[in-house]
Length: 311
Image 1 (cartoon, rainbow, N blue to C red):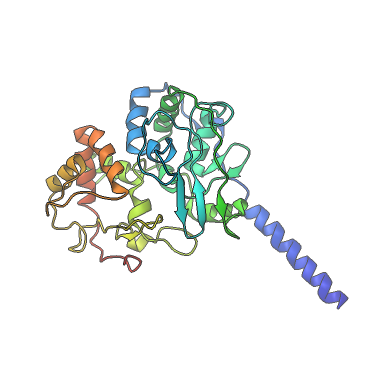
Image 2: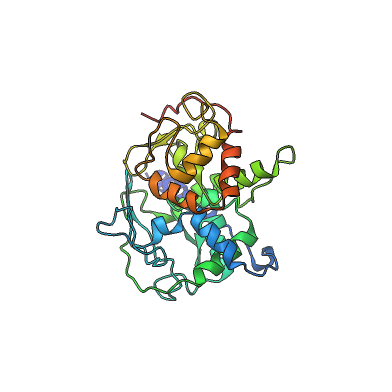
């Protein structure tokens, strides 16, 4: 019995040590950042493309409301109800105490590209850093500069209410080891500048993969079914297949996609609904060239049948 106890304790100690090592935050250092003068105007465009306000601005009425009054009031508080519990969007205003006013540019880059907040805190993947990691350092510097121009707002956001084991934040480090590499989007030299621009917006700041792709048990996107549709994490309908298959948008022309992004109307005379409404409204605010680029990229996606995870 004593031997079994010793072996059991040794196993627990070894498992604990392995867990600790595997979940050590991986971050960038100041030397990784380029010498770049912030462009607030570009940062504003990225703010819109990324839909920052839709999650972090104060919601109107209930915490799960998609309506906001002022996109500059980034005091947080919106709730995201999922199968593992309820998440509450944090304050990302420049307030130094309750927001990110005390964050350096490096802190912000590590949150966006590594999913790690100051102090080595792992961020839950409801924050789509698995897509934001594809953004260029210069664009993230511009985005941080834009956020710094917004009004600081003091707020008290509730703690996440998650069930075990998802409430063990350190465990997110395992997910990050598997799905977060911090690599920036690499343009395809064999395609057009417009397609590459669209790929950057879709795979990076636009984080379209996050909603339109099914996930495995760990929460990682199933690569072979990317963009083939998925259940909405909020339980409000489903994100449709947007590949070039007949089940997706294969019958849409590039201009059909552009028109949809601009107006919210599709070729079947239907209109955008549910959580896609604010996304489409943001797409309508982007430069026309960006909508053209997004459409051009989507037309290059391989045709895939509806995901098995999509009802």
